[in-house]
Image 1: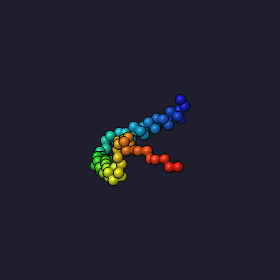
Image 2 (image 1 turned 120 degrees about the horizontal axis):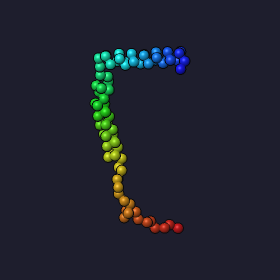
Image 3 (image 1 turned 120 degrees about the vertical axis):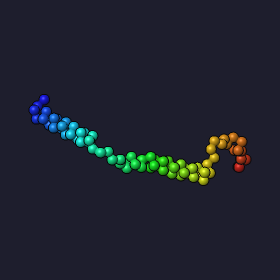
Image 4 (image 1 turned 180 degrees about the horizontal axis):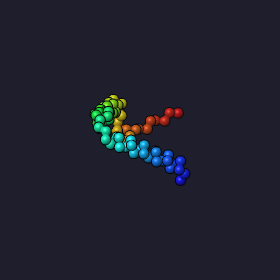
Length: 78
């Protein structure tokens, strides 16, 4: 390996190590997702269920009913 490339890799590795050490010693502060993540997830699930429940009940969709016995042939018109 060339000395310049080796030095560049060593500097990059040292920078990454320095950043990792600095973050490891820092005080952990919860972010938005830590604070409100579950609440947002439950709220979204509630809205999703409410909207689709309304759509399914108001749309008049009949589920799983067979047309057998309800469809009758009409007389042929000439």
